[in-house]
Image (cartoon, rainbow, N blue to C red; front, side, top):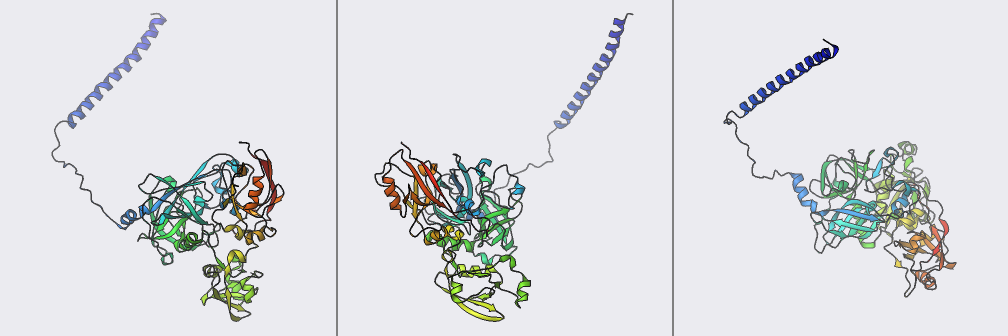
Length: 540
C-alpha cells in the first residue's frame, strides 16, 4: 500500500465516525421532538379554567381624584431665544447657562432645571446667530388665562408658547411681569374660553411629612405626576435669593418641572417647583418649591403694577455672624445685631444705631434676619412698624416709617436693576428713513444714582429687536444711551430727533453706560462701564 492510499484510509475513518454521530443525534432529536409534540397535542385540557378580563372598575384613591381634577390647570411652557445675548437672570448672577459638555461636578449643587444649554463657544462670545429653545411648566390661577411660572423659564425669551392639557394648540403668551428675587413670572394667554384655575392653598399650614404631589412636564413629557412628602420647610440655600425659603420635597421633579405646582392632598397649590439638588442634572430625591404664600404676594403686585415693590427700613447685618455666642455675650438669646445703618434711610432718621440689637418687630420676636425682612418687606411703603431694639441692655421701642427698598438702597446697583418696568417706547421717528431697532424709556432716579449720570441724562434700553442695527452693534437691554454722535440724549424725543437727521449708510456712534454684572448672592457690582457702540446704518 503506497502512502496515498494510507492517507485516504486515515481520513475515511474519522469522517465515517463524524457522520455516524450526526445521524444518531438527528434520530434522537426527532424522537424527542415527536414525543413532546405527541404529549402536548395528545388530548385537550379539561381541568384548566379560562381567564376572564373583568369589567373596568375605577379603584379610586385620593391621588387619582386629585390628578383628574388638577391636570387641566397645569400647562407646558416652551420658549424660544435668539441665542445672541445673555439672559437677564444670567447677567444679574454674573453667570451664563452651563455648557453641555461641562463637568457636572464643577457646577453648583443646586441646579436650575431649565431645559436648555449654551454651547461652549457661547461662554466667551454670546453673539452667534442661532435659535435655541427651553421648556418648563406653569399653572393657571385665573380663568382669564393668567399663569404662574418661574422667571428663569421665560426670562428674556423672544417667544413664549403655552400648551394646555389635552389641547395640542400652542397659544402665544404675553409676559405680564417677573421678579428675580422670588424667581416668579406671570404670563397670560387668550384661549378664547374660560380656563380651569388651580386652587391656592396656604403654605404656612404645610407640615413636614405631609403628602406632596408634583405635576409638570419633566423632559418635555407633559402632564407627568409624581408623589412624595414634604421633607423640610424654610430651606435657605447657598444659591437662593433673600426672599426664597423653600419647601423641600422628595416628590420626583426633573428638568422641565420648573414653574409647575406642588400640591397638597386636597389639590391646593402649596409651592412653585423651582430647583433641585443634583450632581447629575436629574432627580436625586431632593427638590425645592417656593412657598405659594410668597408667590401669591409677588403675583398680586405683578398683575397690578408690573413689578414688585418691597419695604425697607435701611439697616444691614451679616447673616454669617448670627451665632448664639454673639448674642449670649450681649446678654440676649435672640435678635439681629445691626452692622450698618443706611445714611438718610428710615432707620437712621428714627434713631437706630450700629450695635443695636433688633429683638422684635411689631411686638413679634425676631430670632434671625429673615424674621425682620419678612415683616418689613411685606409692609406697605409709607406705613409704620415698631422696631424694638436692645441698646446696652435697655429695650427701646422705635417707630419707623417703611420706605421703598429700591429707593433706600438706591446707591446699590443690584436694586436699581432688579426693578423691571413694563416695556418701553419704540424709538422710531415718524417718516424716518432709518430705524435703529430698539425700545427705551426714561432713566429712574435710582438708576441715575447707581450709574453716576448727570441730571436728566440718558435713555434706558428696554428691548432690542432681532436682526436690526441696534442688535448688530451690540446694544443690550439695560444699556443707557447718553449720546448719539456726540449729541446729548435726555429723552426718547432726543433720539428721534437725531435719528431723523440720518440717512441709510450714515455712520452712527452711541455713547453707552452699561451696569457691571453682580457676583454671587450678596456680592457687589463693579462700577458701570462707559464705551462707544458704532456702525454703519444699512442701505436697504
